[in-house]
Image (cartoon, rainbow, N blue to C red; front, side, top):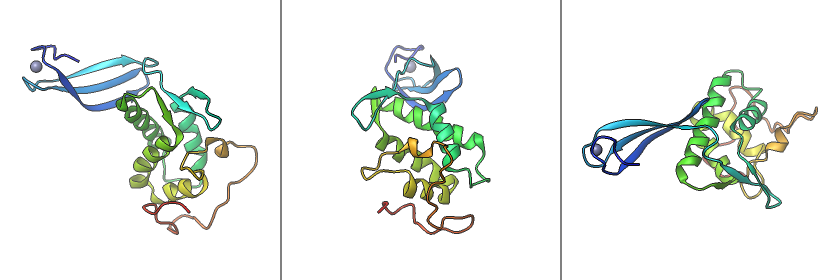
Length: 167
Ligand SMILES: [Zn+2]
């Protein structure tokens, strides 16, 4: 995007997804002035590859709800934390410039953001909700009555090192 002051190319310094759109902070490569642009929600049109090769629209609310279910035994994690994780992930995906993404990339982005907030929740996600190819399996976070395997991950007890790849 061209700088509104001098017309030179600008670069993005920060992308945030807000309820009403995508906000980008930019800095001009020439005059170094900073400015902010807005894009309406929906314009990114992000899609995710499903395991059967089909694609579906990326839905950050769906990701938020799944994260809430995955982390429901972690009361210290606030709904706002998870919403922010989902929106930051969406922003990072938009920044790649690719229309279609994978659940493996989403999983890595989620873990990057969740680990500093709650290491145990991130470890639980890594152990219980990734498939062999590292793809996030949101359907495993769906409710109907079944508790996911716990593998000894409880409050205050760090069993799995999130820095280590899942088995
Ligand atoms: Zn400029």
